Length: 259
Ligand code: COA
Image 1: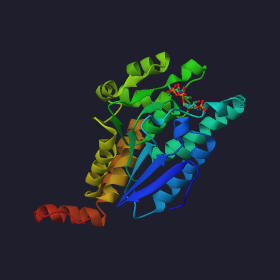
Image 2 (image 1 turned 90 degrees about the horizontal axis):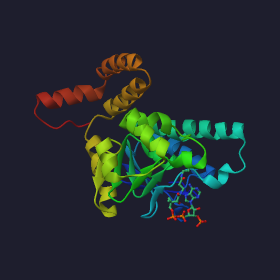
Image 3 (image 1 turned 45 degrees about the vertical axis):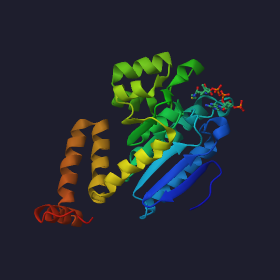
């Protein structure tokens, strides 16, 4: 795999593990890190040996403590809008629409752009000690990498507005109860194992179907009528696939499918 300045990429069987590697800056997302994330997702999308991805932060303190605040200083209004647009298009939306499952392994602070990065992933697993929040209003700004949209989708408008308007952090148990994270693990050492175990469940399923399911869910999140239509279309498309023939034959022959 290519080497990068601010991220580490390892592969364990079918799982690629991307680690944001700026531990001394709490893995804050500067422009170089965003560029590298954009590139690595393009590469992994094409890599047929990779079936799922874990995204995490280096060390035990932070997943990602936000966009790099130092880079904000020089930006005017138009440049700030462009930063938001390019971050959303090149990283956050790319993750949301990625054709293979991506799990955020939240190993510590996930704040601002860091929480937004986790929100864009398909599934989130947090360590018990993790803290999550959108503190942007304390900087005089609002979330700019999709937080005002994706957080309400996950936790509802009421809890989302509470988090966004107070800027306060929530702990992993509250996040779990609110539906912000899918699972909480007690220790850092369990975090990666839990994410990989979830991904490995998906590897036993049809890849064609998984990609179609991600697509249909994503369309419906934006527009529910279009989502139903997309589901109908993709449901039909699955019926032409080799995976569907194998999956149904395996069920009828009382054996495991070989996708
Ligand atoms: N952007 C740039 N640098 C950041 C950063 C960010 N979002 N978050 C942390 N850092 C840097 C700090 O500047 C510090 O660097 P330094 O050693 O060169 O001074 C280093 O990471 C360690 O952070 P520090 O604040 O000293 O750690 P702490 O344990 O006292 O506090 C936090 C941890 C997470 C509470 C605190 O770092 C924080 O509030 N970060 C900003 C969170 C935020 O507002 N994010 C939203 C951005 S839109």
